Length: 141
Image 1 (cartoon, rainbow, N blue to C red):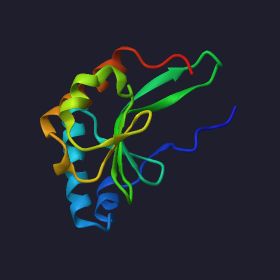
Image 2 (image 1 turned 135 degrees about the vertical axis):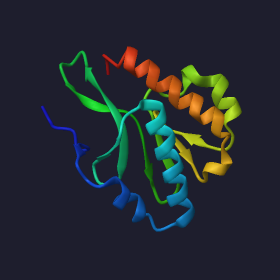
Image 3 (image 1 turned 30 degrees about the vertical axis):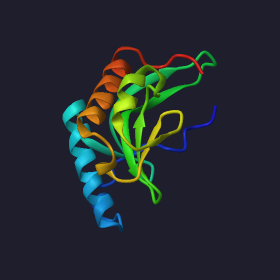
Image 4 (image 1 turned 90 degrees about the vertical axis):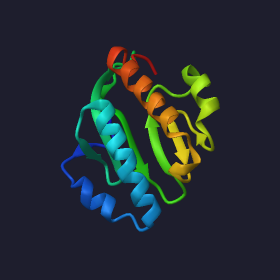
């Protein structure tokens, strides 16, 4: 069975954030890093070349594939700040209506600037996702 491409490693998170070219994006990264660390109680860890993750959970799919993944995390992509909300978004409809300006993928929340979203709502979204993942990680795919 193939190994996941994105793996946890001991890269320096602060050096990575300092390397983000856009000053505003760097500030947003520091803010999100602080929020995620407070919510998870976990230190930031590099996953692959450009993702900062917090905590882990173990998953086992019906196919037999299994592994470990972050509870939550983010990446300062060129187009947007990408936050990894592992529960996805359908279970968070009420919060999503209050969040502000964003787009989503399956588990990705794309934000151009942190000031585009309501920070207390973002914190609730991250808290709810992390709490759910700690209780019930995915078991099918």
